[in-house]
Length: 184
Image (cartoon, rainbow, N blue to C red; front, side, top):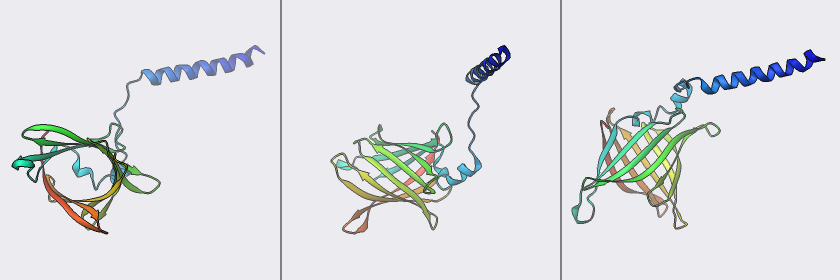
């Protein structure tokens, strides 16, 4: 009877040893799975450096710029991004979000929050070389609005973002911003 009791104890001790070894072993840096990386290919050009663009002037002709920074998530299973307005050289963060592959719906999804507390959610499709972002803004005042952003790359370090708002049953142009990549 002793050997039968001893066997489960040895198995438990071995299991504890393996678990402890895995907890103390250095973690390997995650590497993107080629199949996962390929689903991010349309937006991967956004990764790296700092993107900057000029917005239409603010009140009293104030110069307003916009910045965007995008990087892989730590686990390489998404792309996170942050945006900021720059007014008279002063940065004001306004967006933080993430792109992620939806394996059930088989499309790129994204969501972010803005500095007003609104939640923005949508999906990304590629149409004739243009990244089309269709999204809904869930506004803190309890309403929603529909917006579309159309990103067109003009080389590795330039893109144009045309933003349209859904109004009176049609898309109306809101603003177009040309971004240039610079070092961080």
